[in-house]
Length: 324
Image (tube, rainbow, N blue to C red):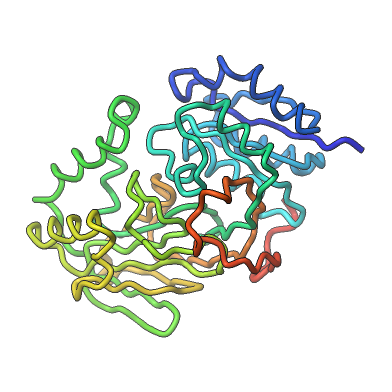
């Protein structure tokens, strides 16, 4: 039986470059042996997520998320809770395109990105679960993680990740620490911090040194806790991060690996949680790494040597919702 692929694309992403390239993209997947169809997302909430769930339940072998990181996140949320999950591929057409950056997928040309599937290289990727939601790249909490909510979409489109730098610089004088209680493998942090980050890849906001030694498939998050909220110290830490990821050895940082994190704020202070750059609810929240949960097409040849463990045995570490 011929394999089937469903492309779920955001027609307005990349200044409509996806829409203009769709005939060529469909041809690439057809040439690789897939009977291929496309679905354009709508303004309806969770449009991409719901279509991904439908396609998976109908037995599609491959679901392709075409758009920005938000579209990819929705597609991941559409299939991650299912018992039977199709393979995934991505075609980036957003602003920062962190996930494509981490998987070494071309970010400037949707047609070239689609051709990655022709190499037939996949990774069984770790996926994060945050209470009843899923994320594929980053989760975080604390004042610093809230800057993404304040960057207007039109600014993101024009300036890309430079927009985050501009907004971050404006916010620095306002940053205050949040009293946190964080439980992770082998430790507990109880005290004030400006943020925590849980990384599944090495790319955050367009930067590739935030978690410099990350593995995409080892079942562990890279956990970063930034204890200081002092503006001068934060600027120094950012400089260290940009200069080869040297921030991870700084005494103002806790950097470790963990399979799970339980996060809550203290003193009844609100702590908003960021999931893949969007608001994902408030703490308390439990984060679990779903080991090698979704098989993803990637440009494996171009990845750093230690990015993939090589032990690509699909493991179910936690029960998923099989009723979806």
